[in-house]
Image 1 (cartoon, protein in one colour):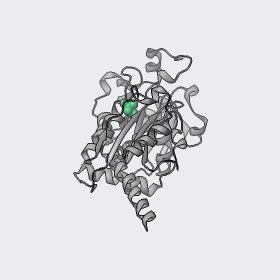
Image 2: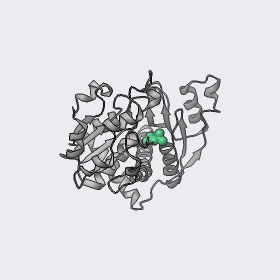
Image 3: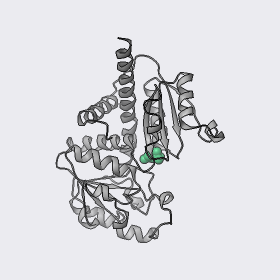
Image 4: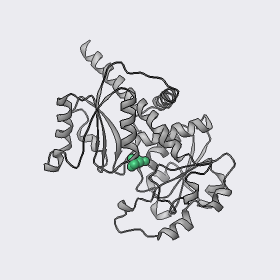
Length: 297
Ligand code: CP
């Protein structure tokens, strides 16, 4: 997200909207693979759906049975897929900035499907698309990101992009889970105050797997202090929406009955994800063609 200009972000949102309306593009069949070294349901399946909707050929890749298990490096894995003839790979990896070891060393295009506690660009762009559909602008919107901020690549990507596009970003949840870097982007706000004043409440998953010493709260205690429950939902502004990147810990960060309530855009976000990822794939492949053209000329 740091590398995209505001104009490129808006271009991707508008391209995603065009794909949602039925636009079809991509002139030749391209080859893609999705390399997921961390678990995923949404990102992996929707990248694959996006690739198929664009008419791309999807080469299967299973990290559990790939030669990475025999000690092959990420670089050698990607270089191999390039040699085999792939045009683009989507990579999710547990290491922050895994792409640094690939940048400038491979010719195929790489899309970040989530790097450690770094960034999650496709989630960010689909979140932007969802907010844009709702409010038609980001300027002056009050967006509060709530919960496990420190471990969240979604929080990082969204906070940076939303602020750049003119939204007023705030953070809430346990103070000990905040991130000093992000608090330079937006202030901390008490959760009950955020519930009543935010246009967008972006609830985050409590990432149990990244808490090295276990959770400091019981699930019930977390839900009571920082969870979005029916009583809090009633105090939200009439036009406000609820978002969550999912997977959802039902009954922890959000009450079970609110996951599909009228304010919730959680499944809308997932549906938008396919169009956002189509836009991203088209964008990187167009850039690749432009670079090839520049090289030939
Ligand atoms: N939101 C998200 O990244 O979900 P997955 O981990 O299932 O891909």
